[in-house]
Length: 297
Image 1 (cartoon, rainbow, N blue to C red):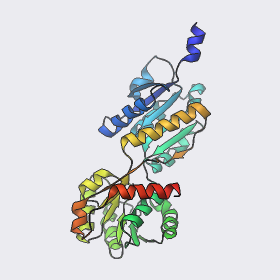
Image 2 (image 1 turned 135 degrees about the vertical axis):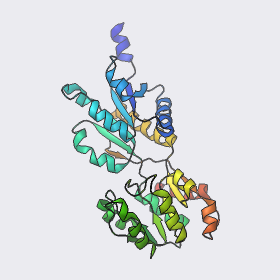
Image 3 (image 1 turned 30 degrees about the horizontal axis):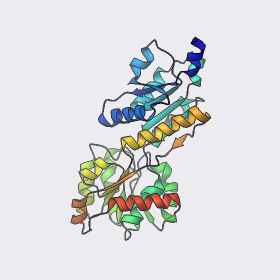
Image 4 (image 1 turned 60 degrees about the vertical axis):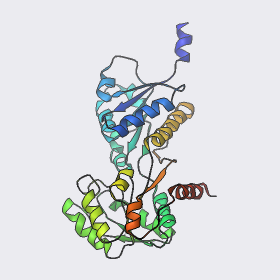
């Protein structure tokens, strides 16, 4: 009877948290709900999970950068069997994932990244701002290595990339931005934390606003703060994509290293649009068009 019960037991999935922010907690809870009937899911801080004396997990999911770093630090190094437990990181930027590759090692690993695909971001600009052909980008430390890729994607859509001087420190941000604003029709914000963070955002938005050059961002919070548009994925959308990755692993034992979130939402700031002389955006129609474009319809 015990053997039968063990054979039928649902796989144990740890969902590791390190931050108690609403986005992290909402993503973790939505993920647990999405895996109901598929796995036995335990959501907790990494310190609690790794210190516990319960069963060893079949799979570990980390929510956020701090949770990923904490799990990589706390995973037992001397017990080889732990190195076989797959790790899925979610709610993390692609740049962080690339920077942690060496630490992850040969462990089965996948990351559901926060970054929207470049093709999607540029398609948003073409669809919502068809007259804006010169796209400005600030080249921070995480953006510079991707400039060739960004330029290729932009060129394929009839867009010209306008790149400012390299941003290596905080004091470089505004000289680079002012240089970009001389010729750019729109500025595309990319998730480079040296440039776009809580301490710099208001000044960046004020500078672009005064230049009457819209900012297209990667966060709904940025749109509320004064960016014109953003395409982003909500915690529930992130959770559903992550749940699919978990189910795919449990069924097929395969993981893709980088997974972009298929579901997304478009948001706009109508007040900023009006100040720029633009009509209100039909964001649902724009999102539907982007979905059709990605589906090849």
